[in-house]
Image (tube, rainbow, N blue to C red):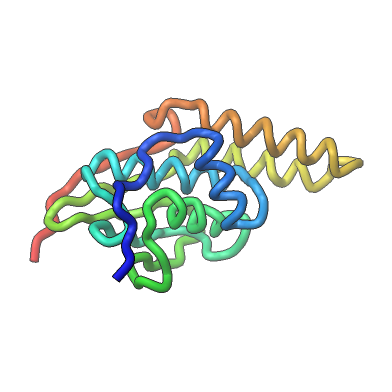
Length: 162
């Protein structure tokens, strides 16, 4: 069987963003949030990615919030096809519970961050031209990529009990 040989990348950079855009079809703030969530989980759990990590996402399973899922898939290698990613419908939060063996981490987008991103995206729907919308979208993506994880997420570590 052919399998990926190296651990998943654990840092955010332009090449990761390009891979995510290729997978998702376009760039967006919620996709960047998903990338950051997955990277954080890989680090916290010391996971290689693809097969040794599972995730249950808790979010509004509709765009734009659901774009978080594609960011998580690209950054962790968890996929719908391998059945190591699941979704639990939640309207008011965006979080993901990642597990590796008996260790787990819950990564929740801070409420103020989620509100800010939703508001900025709603404001973008009212711009006069597409270039202005793209510029605002890119600005928000860069803002989310640059912030320290502690300003974006609430992180809770736990042990998985059988």
